[in-house]
Amino acid sequence: MPDFKGTSNTEDEYFAREDAEKKRKLALQVKRETQAAERERLRALHWMRCPKCGMEMQGLKMRGVDVDVCFSCNGIFLDQKDLEHFEKHPGGAVMRAFLNWLDTEKKK
Ligand SMILES: [Zn+2]
Image (tube, rainbow, N blue to C red):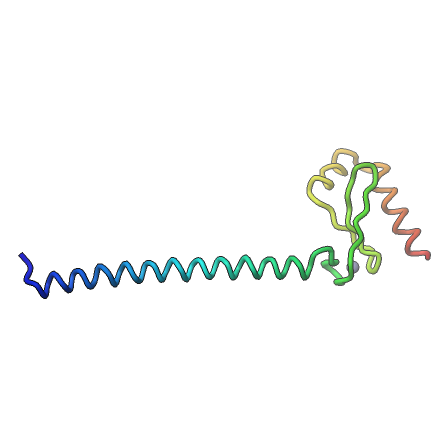
């Protein structure tokens, strides 16, 4: 049977552990929220910006295929589903149409 002091120390430790656990969970929550806010800040900063030159990209749609085009450096950004479209239609007219469009834009 623990004496009063021993019981009190055990209780103190219990509450200290509880308190530390609450603080740890709060710190993790703040960290997650900060990361989410940072991701949102980066998304807003980079959304529709060319990953190569940083200029604004233009969304184009041709025959059901969406591509983001940078007319500054002629970069093209594709989603995976659109890349799969080109895989299914290799050498297809859609890619040629996009490339012709870029060539036309280059000549302007
Ligand atoms: Zn670019």
